[in-house]
Length: 263
Image (cartoon, rainbow, N blue to C red; front, side, top):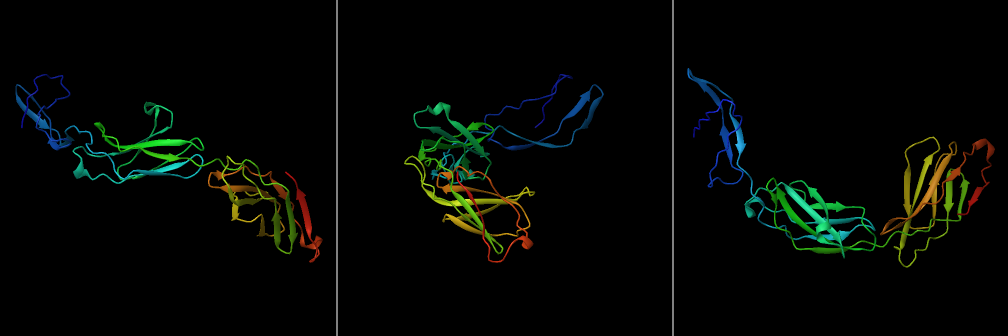
């Protein structure tokens, strides 16, 4: 097909044809002419006709709570053959029970991603979620709405009454059990964070007990803190405990060095 644009100032041309399939590729080149004849043509460029919104809704949508503030939502990939419009990705809408759907938060994913993690939510709250496919033309129809409730918040009480002892090449830590309130997630363990005083990186040990043994060299100062673990997330941390280095020359083999910290 050839079209002549008579204006020398023209910089675009719109080809209209109602029978054009959505997002169909066309090869195009543009030339110039004057009263002496035709000039050279540009190189060939592929352009596409306009897209059409996806016509199918995502299926098999479900969500689960990860913590007091995070949830994850999943859905099945929508095959291109099931929708007239090309699919660029998916949009997840989420809103708290009692809020208007028009005020929903939105998160977009890329083409083949079939899950999304939503963060910074309210604890112990019921949320509604729905998923749509989208492309350059707009949004497709919405999936069925699914519901999920975020978990109770983590325990607010930090580990207290922390005692440490050193013997041989070990540091032994003990602390009181943290008890969650009725509106908090139950404690299912503890995280012990420790690092050298001059070190930036932090090491972590998890335990379901109220004590732990650390096999650490004694020629360093250590900074240690402890957090309770729950389904709602990590609880409040204890105050930092500094364990000073203990030189071998200043320690008898059978001697216990101890410190006591009440929080």
